[in-house]
Length: 133
Image (tube, rainbow, N blue to C red; front, side, top):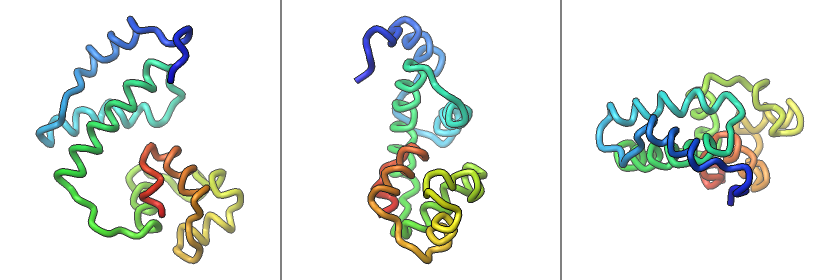
């Protein structure tokens, strides 16, 4: 739960009013919310922005799960897909793995993703850790 002292409800209401989040029904609505979320992924967020980000990501995930079921991707394929979608290279996420050697082995499918690493990847990519298990 967000700290009540740090969280500014008026600022959050303004952000929500600007973003106008709603259940996504069309690809155009999905693209509009993605255009709001993607720049947020690249910077530190205020508590109000973080709360809005979580809401928008949930709406996008729900829409994409309904319209673009992923099927059975392996954890490695999911990691590679998320890296590609965010234009990330191994060096951009090596800090999550502890070493470039481990990062290389995991990204290339030569080493399994541990539960601890799945949690770190989930937090980093703002997705469920279950995608990596």
